[in-house]
Structure formats: C-alpha cells, structure tokens
Image 1 (cartoon, rainbow, N blue to C red):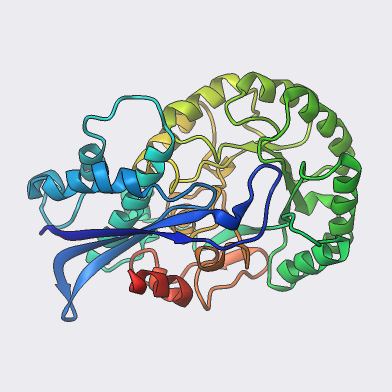
Image 2: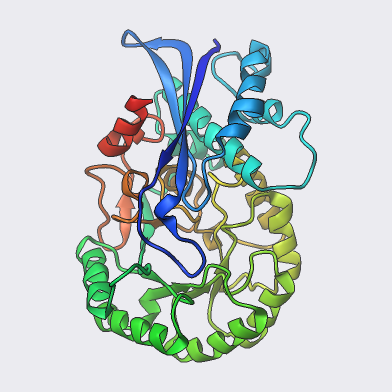
Length: 386
C-alpha cells in the first residue's frame, strides 16, 4: 500500500465580503488530492483536503517541503502497524521532520490540508464515514449523529444596509439554523449596536446571536465594547483582541460576565495551552474555536483535546471555526460542541453537502465513506479540475 501521487493547487475564493480586519476579495484556498494504489470498484481510492477560510493557500510550503517528504518516505513509515491502512500520525511526523518548534503560521495550514486528505483516504479504505473511524478509536463507537451548527454571516460589503442584513439572517433562520453570528468592529459602536438590534428582531432575543470582532480591538477598546454589549446577553463575544494578546483577553474576561470565544487563529497545542493558562477564560461559559484544518490537522487537534481535558475543559466547549465537513465529522466522532457553518458565504468551500441541511439548528450526519466531499457538487468540480 502506498501513495501514488499528491496534487495541490491554489484556487480563488472570490468573495466580496469583509470583516473588521480582512477583505476576502483576493483570498485563496489550497486544495489537495492524494491518490493511493488501493483499487476499489476499478478505480484508485483518493483523499481530498483543503485549507479552511481566512488563510491564503500555502502551496509553496506544500510543494517544497511537506509533499516531497511524504513521497520520499518508505511505505512502512506511513502505514498502520497491521499494514492495512495509512497512519496519519506517522505521516504527520514525516511531514514535520526537520521543522523547528514554534512559528505556527502558514506551515500549520499546509500540514492541515494534507492531513485532511489523509484522513479522508483512511476512512475510505475502511469504507466508513470519518466520524465512525474517530468514534471507534476514541469513544468506544459512540457517535453524535446530530451535530449542533450555527450560521456565520453578517459580513460587511459595499451597499449592505440593515434591510439587507436582516434579509441575510432571515434566510439563515428559514434554512433551519437557530443561532447566527455577525461581524462587529468594522463600523462604529452605534452602527453595530443597531445591526445587533435589527438581527435580534428576527431571532427573538439576542441570546441567539454571537458577535465577532476578528481580533481588531486593543484591550481598552475591547473592554469599552464589552460594556456596551453586556446588556444584550449575547451568545458570545468573539476574538475581542489580537489572538495572542492573552493578558488583554484576561482583562476583558474580568469585566465581561457573558461568554467569550476565541482560538481560530491559534495553530498548535502549545499555543492553545498558553491561552488556557494566561487568557483568563472560564471553562463553564467560554468557547474554544481552534480549526483543525488550519492548525496542523486532526492529529494535532486530538493532542489539543487531550491537553484541554488535562486542564479541566470539556470537549463540548470546543466549536471549531471554518464551517467545513472535516470539523463536522470531528464533532460527530469526538463529541465536541458543534460546528460553524457559512451558508452562501465562501462559495464551494462553505456548507456540508448538496442535500444536507440543518433542522432546528442540527445536522444529521450522512453515512458516506470518508469526509463526504463527493456529496458537494460545486466543491467536487474544483477537485475534478485539478
């Protein structure tokens, strides 16, 4: 059993939206296809992976370091002990050979995309959904067949007024979502309060609304906004300060009694451990949003979950960023708290499948082998073009 080829490509997301910090009009994503020599129904089995949104395609790192290491590795260094499948943990060690500790940036994104494709391939070889593979290995076979999801939107873009925002959010609610998230910090405090209140007219109460500042504020600004947001009793207040400003986050947590959320821009277990140690977060109310596709893949995410358990954090406090099928399977298989969703926001890279839709805020997991990327026709077309 061996890897025959690994192909990759940078593709445009082509979205005109922006948050308080990033304009997505020139954002790219990286896609990966791993072909094996395992033949099923007359065709070789392949694994598909891609980078999560918010980070540019790290194709140079994949092409120059990670992919050559995998292709040069001996077969035994990539296979499980019984030789019947690939071992993503061994492959991870091969990819990270000769990489210095620290510097968890675009390197983690490159490894994460390849890791996703490997896990997709592993599950297909076993002819099972990825969530079942994970449940069998880590939870005695217990699967969360229904996974909580919330709709992330409420971005800024030219000409978008309150009525357009309300139309967008109403579309989410009509589609089966019960909780939504909107951006803040890209307009004035007064304007963003009006946006929150307009959305609350649709959701019924602000507790079904999360807000996301995307790390824009200084600690002083974040506290000012926290004081203004507190009366709404929102679902959570996300990334109020720079993701590595743990002291600033701790200052916000001291005065904000509601839930905070952060972690999507932390790319390693060690960085997450520092967040838990120094960020002032509360394990009874706050949420952790590390995205496996951005942070060295599922192999590292499993290590992160183990670390969190050692520090008294429940898996249900983890709701990953990204809105992709990979995290959806992880949520179902490992019993974490749910998953983000980007209906209609990031084109082919958002959503979970052509016929997979939420009901009362939950997704019913499909039975397709692997991650189920084949169930999403627009995304599969991108892979076919590769």
